[in-house]
Length: 485
Image 1 (tube, rainbow, N blue to C red):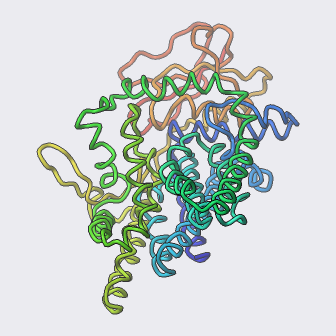
Image 2 (cartoon, rainbow, N blue to C red):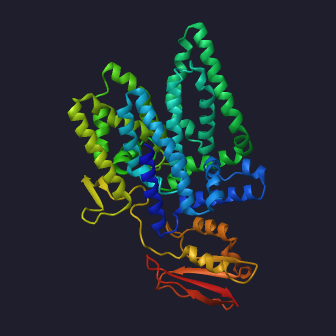
């Protein structure tokens, strides 16, 4: 397991070091926040470090800071932290969950499957919050099951702490674990008196630990969070063109997402086979927490207007176990062959998601009545194979930072796009102590960064002079830096 983790982490770091594009919107935002918390810590602003509101809870950013302290606040360091902390958690939690429900072979194969799915593989080449959430949810489900409906006291503290970490990672943690949490807690009501008393006590202790840990951040920021969630849960979905709730498109959205983004064809077929063979009484009993996790998450997030392929990532460990448990019910020789073929496919998929193999198509799609279904793709979610594209966003900020003046402010005039965006500027600015100002106040800034289509007129302001032009960007736009005369 450690060898698998080491190889995958090394390949992910190589990918990041070879990728030349700046971070896309969401990744740049999380990188910015990690640097913000790093600055809080370095400058002794402990109250801001604990309670500061940056929309997302702070645990992901906190977890990265020991790596920043040792290696510097760099993009590849954040990815390394994500892999070593949450990649380890996901791999071993999936292994032990599969082992707990079935056996060691199922756990090992499921761990290999989950860590190499296109969604998980690509998310661990980035610095985003959903990979960490998936790992924490998997660990929490494992602890819940091992607690034997909260009758095993030794898991009480661990459950409370992991629940707190989950809520401080992302608030959707509670939605992701709710189905299994209900499965474990409701039967307590029918236990014999002494068992019920002990189980309820353990549950309340776990809840109290979790509540005490998370309440400072949540109660401090509850109004801001409620306002933001109100917009992002409803209005943002409409603005982004997500389907209306109760429409056919909404009901099928996350089902299609399993094939198109999270698994692709072969793992989806393995998963369907697992579902089809799970209805024997003993099999269903073992797989019930997995099924509840999968179905519960699909229903809950389908009922939310704002949709994203990443939101149901926490089901993937359960999906991986469902996709593999049945293999080892076959004859031993057949099971070995199928398991071997699955491992070969997983290794192939993991490599092709980040390292393009030119002899096969980048995408293999199936068109059914105008609907595109991805059977296989040499990419994950948002990112795929690394590129040599030069966007010069980091370079233009560095050029301003190197100017021999104290007031290093700039205004940006141009489009906000996936590989050249405002969050990227904010991230690079935080690293270089450079400040971006509003174009409305252009007279108060010392530099202007202009990105325009080649056919657009050049920036013409008598107060500024052209200082530098950059090579044409990958989308054909032209980038220039102007300085105040």
